Image (cartoon, rainbow, N blue to C red; front, side):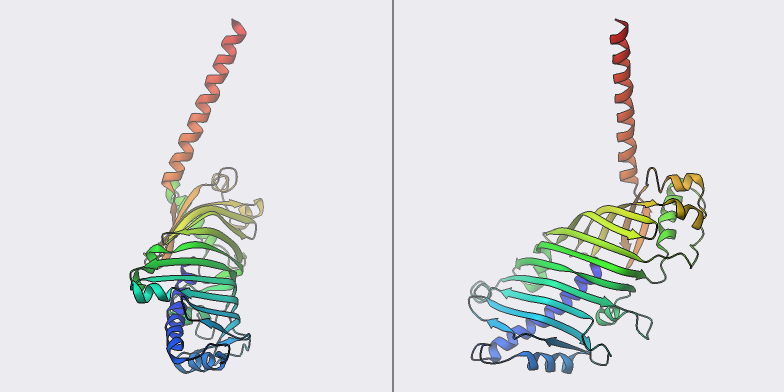
Length: 328
């Protein structure tokens, strides 16, 4: 999910940045005289299958920073029926240090997206509009919204990913992960650790709509999320993890807690339900060959076992000391 957003952002920024430089050389006077919105709309429709609509006047400065500022921005499919677009941005601000670019041949860029809202929906081709835009196969339907504030500098455009710093926060509501049984993936990870038989797939009538909240910092091209929260019907998933923008690798450790209702719906044994209720089993989520894989988090399981053992030893030691003091 985070990977989907970042791919979309990277592709959009490359096109937009190239366009900004073109405008900088094309325009002799400032954007206070020229309204760039019709030109932006025409360019996007002519060279892509999407149209960029900006409701408020665009502001551009050239020196010492090339700065693009736009509010109420919409992106829609040229042949789509949604007049408002499936991507909405309250404010987009991009700054490029043109002085550094000219004098030092280095790139310094800052990007602020204050309030983005993406409506991901399945189309007639059995994929989402986001998948069509990015040529991906995440097949995630839902509303994605949040904020992004990042900056980066490097000797070349290709090296910018390695030095990204900033913050990202977003939520996903009313989400569906097509053809993916999340409950089955969680239970299968537990079965691997316990050496149990693989559980049956969930009944199709069991709802698996979910919402996600993600907030974190980006340090040297790595997004760090210390407070991952995901809510599903009769279950909650929490955890932490990271996303490496350079390798586009995902690495999360999560714990799923099921309510009593799920025990009967999923036909769980007492032992299995215990591992998703009283003491949720840590599960590792990583991307492998473009797919998210769920496996037991051996490192965290071992850490928890060691901590429990130490606590029990400490309790026994305290009890022994207490008894010795009583009988003295």
